[in-house]
Image (tube, rainbow, N blue to C red; front, side):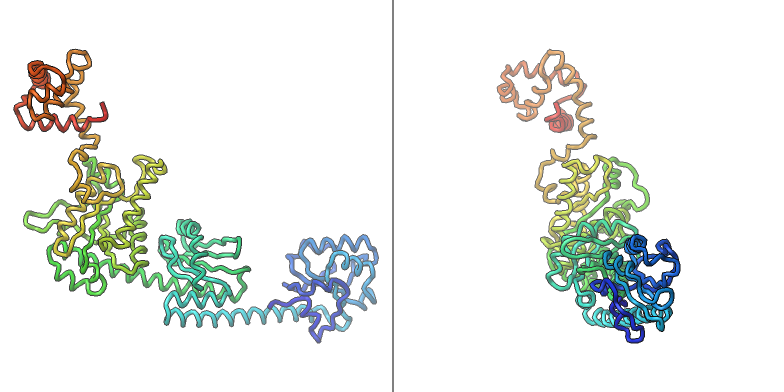
Length: 558
């Protein structure tokens, strides 16, 4: 406790006597300062006990004393100490009355008590309080360290909540609550996820205070990297005191060490994961299982999904046929090598949208207690997740949210760099290369359709016509059919509709003519005109195929 006016009054050596403002004696005193200036306010900071002898004051003038005391109160002075027996034998009534009117504590200082003694008493009390706070802080640090070593972050949070008399919570890189103490605090902490995500966007170390009902919450980032990997929340009813502040800073240091250690372990696990994936793609599942051990062994014991992820800029470059700079996937391996065997190369950790997706998926897997393999591959990210597990569901949910945002025009068309994903069918260790090929095919379709995620089942069970939904294909179709459309526009016959009917009836003249409501000789004449205008023979199956696909590609755009 800091010194108060009451503690000074009760100090046996000072012999102070209360003359006014007794109801405010519990006010803390930041310092004791002697001044004989008629207006000492410019030199006050607030929280002082002002000691005077009224050398330059007209202490017997009621109006002057009211102005004097009122100005001191407005400046934050917490009390007046008046030395009697120096210039006045007693405290003038004008000053006593002014102090009572303002509620300003007024202490009578006997002649034998020097102002220096009061200043020393305040200084000693402040020093004692600081020493006590530092001692309590060191004790809290030892206690927190003990719990961190024995019980991990959850135990540290429990100890911290007890130290501050409130609650504490730990957030992961996505802003989700990873642990909280006491248990009821998890719900309170979850309401702060938007603030935590905003804090993660700032350059660490960063912190902010969220005030409101029913508590005051401090949020702090954890970690030393440019992108925070965790955050700490501490909720209390009142602002933290010195001892509580020491405890919070100790918790931040310990959790940062834990976070950095976890990051190093994560990078080592990622290297193991890359080796496991290389072996799977090379057709060596048994070696992969041996290397995976208990780290990824459970993932290989059940059907899994392989997911290929690209940022939208890289996806658009692939879709347009442009060369992607540094990090682009290498060409397909030589004939005879397993598909994908040469593809996976562990590089720098993913950044931007790929990093955000990786953190989201890994956090979902951690909460569910399941393994997930995430390997950066140049400008791609390769994910291996349990089929039907939390990590796979997190990918699907993440993609659905992106598609909804695009549909609501919350993302600018062509300007966003959000992930594009291809998801394989369920597979086992011996079919990793097939799963990679399926994921790449699904990714290619996702690029062309402008979707965040496409599953291979959609590609395998859907119609090939869906693959024609591409600007380049439509441009080809328009060019191929343009002469026929120009002919029909003159009103000299319906060649496009006739061609569509004839092709859809597999060249059967009577059936196609009946559908059009014309004589079969009329239809034969129209097909000869098509050949003449296009300069191509309808007897060629390749020509018929190209014309049919062109008609399908332009359906709904005419």
